[in-house]
Amino acid sequence: MTQAVVRIVISGAGGRMGSRIINLALAQPERFKLLAATERADSPLIGEDAGVVAGAKPAGVKIAAEFHTAADVLLDFSSPAGARAMLQHCVRGKMAMLIGTTGLTPDDQLLIDAASRSIAVLQTGNTSLGVNVLLQIVAEVARRLGPNYDVEIVEKHHNLKKDAPSGTALSLAEAIGRAIPACRENPDAALVHGRHGPDTLRRSGTIGMHALRMGDVVGEHTVYFAAPGERIELTHVAATRDTFARGALRAAEFLAGKKPGRYSMAHVLGI
Image 1 (tube, rainbow, N blue to C red):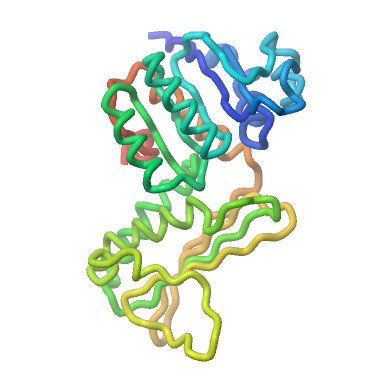
Image 2 (tube, rainbow, N blue to C red):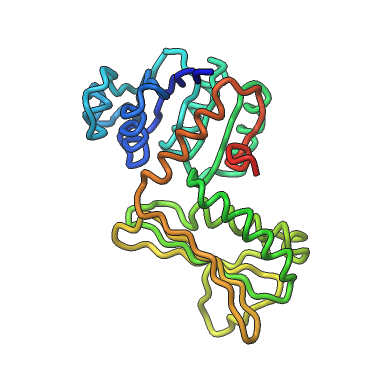
């Protein structure tokens, strides 16, 4: 049976992720149709062709501050404020939404929970298929090793990334924390962000978190499990943003036509 073409809208069309998603979507007209592309109202890209801005052929779609076209899925890689606005737009239009924007607050999560009662929503800090398999692996390693291994997470990104730690690093910590009783009981106290000062002795039942910002690093995450005499290092390296763009488009295909609910990349992968 021939798969239907997924009609998409890109929010944050001028950003690094938005541009790559547009570029890859336009190269696959048998799978995707770009209906609209948005940017903030004061963006100099307003009125420009979304395909040209993305470095592809003209798409016949002008970047705008808002849109009124009915689509299957909206993919948001804008900003927390932009994501909030688009979430309400999707609820009104009964449109599925992929939220790839990071830096969201606990209140934003409540808004997403509420929206998921009327539309399909997938919110993730990382659309890489490999990273989402890693999330399953680190949780299993933590369960198998038990609480006597030190856990540290180091994430590296480019020097223009605004939020820290990355959404992916937080997801890794959450997955590990659920598997370690001492962390699960008090997740906020379990996470230690960097270390400085005269007394930084490592406490058991904690997860160390470290963020590096440098050059044009696309994204690297390493989780360490260490005990006397041995160390396990699990690393994911993203060499190009196309890794995330391909995952986002696969998630869009998954979301198209889905019933209301809150989904994850694990649902996309069937794990």
